[in-house]
Structure formats: C-alpha cells, structure tokens
Length: 179
Image (cartoon, rainbow, N blue to C red; front, side, top):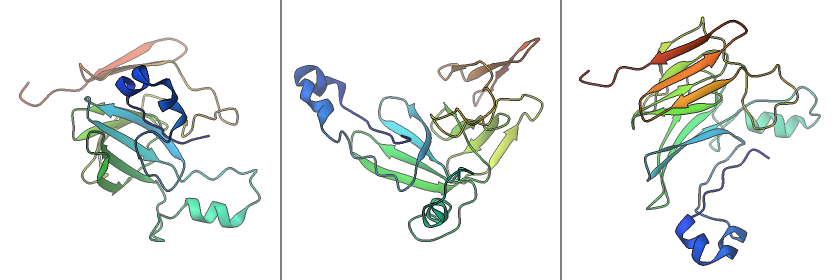
C-alpha cells in the first residue's frame, strides 16, 4: 500500500494505542510515491500517477492520472504539510517524474526517478539534473515489477547523496546558499 501515515511519537510512547488511530491527517488523493521530512515540522509527499500495466480497472487508472479537480497530472503532485498545525501548506504539479525524494533545505527536493533531479517545491520545475547518474525507476514501495534500484545513500543534513553502479559510487554535493 502506498499511503503515508504520520504519528506523534511522544503521544505513542505515552499511549501505544495511538498507532491504532489515523495519526496526523495527511490528506492525499492518490497513491504516495514517496515522502520525506523537512526538519521536524514539515513533510513533503510526492503523489504518483503511475498506472500498472496489469491493472484492468480503467476508471481507477484514469483517476490516478488526474488530481481531485480533474486536471491532468502526467507527473503527479508535490504536497508540503505542516505537521505541527496538521495542515496542507502547498501543492504543486511536478514537471518531471519524481520517484524517491530527499529534502534539500525547505524549498527543494531531489527526485530520483531515472536520474537525480533538483526540484523546486514552489514551482515543480527541475532546476538541475544529473542524467548520467542512473538511479532507477522506483515510484512506489512496491517494486517487484521494476528493474532493481541501485544502492543509494542520502545525507539531507549536508545536502549530498550517493548512487552506486556496477563499477563506481558517484557522490553529489549540492552547494548551500552563500557557499
């Protein structure tokens, strides 16, 4: 199942049945491709529009390629949630397939579908990309139907990531503003 559930750990330590609840309200209209925390108070969720070739339900497949307003979204949406206020802060149409994500500050993420892409959370636009680094086609936690995803390591605190292939490991360091 590709859905995001967020729980308050302090509450769960006091009351373990908290995990039986719905958790914090993170309202998504489609399957969640991936998610990442931005600091302690925000969550970015990438919503997928992937349609599986073996699915027979045409109505369901059509719904997954549109947002709740019926607009076509070939690459899905990026939603930013405030976890303290439990509210949606922003929604933007992604301008490229996103896949697995990693935060870069509060305004950007790296999307790893096919190759790493620096994506602006305010516009959905790809700011920079590394097409020579192959990072797989993962758009779900369910990956039996895709080619193996290469080993990757994320260091969101220091704005860097690594992707391995058969012969080498490539490390990319994103410059922080003012550096």
